[in-house]
Length: 114
Length: 111
Image (cartoon, rainbow over all chains, first blue to last red; front, side):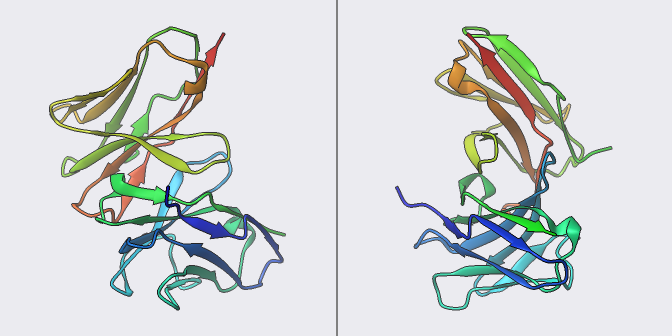
């Protein structure tokens, strides 16, 4: 069964450093998303991406965040200058149709900012 | 008021029990509704979409009440493997866009 893959599974970084979280969506999917989940809290939408541009973003997705689809297969989330409160599980998801109920999630990257 | 509010739980039930979760949403313009399941420290996985007429998938039944702005999930004959956190997801547009997840309701099924 095709799946969304994310790397790394766990990243530890120092406050103020830049991190790039990588995702390989399912190959025929056109819509891509990033969500985050702080430990013990709910899943929060960050951004959706379609046709090589951001289609929607939440209040969390400020200037510190950016997304890119650099090569037609990877979909990355960059956090420019990490803060302690960026520590969370980051989930990538992709969808062929754009409907959230038809989005498949990757297994997540656990980001720990120290 | 939260956009999506779920029964706080946790629910601890014996195997074979029937259990129901409720979820209310505040945006009357919400268009699509889903139940996801999340195992500890894993990714959310779609359990089922929720349709206006209600829908059933094996032991699972989902209902939507637009007038009262709530959705429900009923699990019959619960199994140990049903132990997980159940997430209510509400979307206000045709596309995924800003989907809103509830805090989740944790279910533990005991032998």
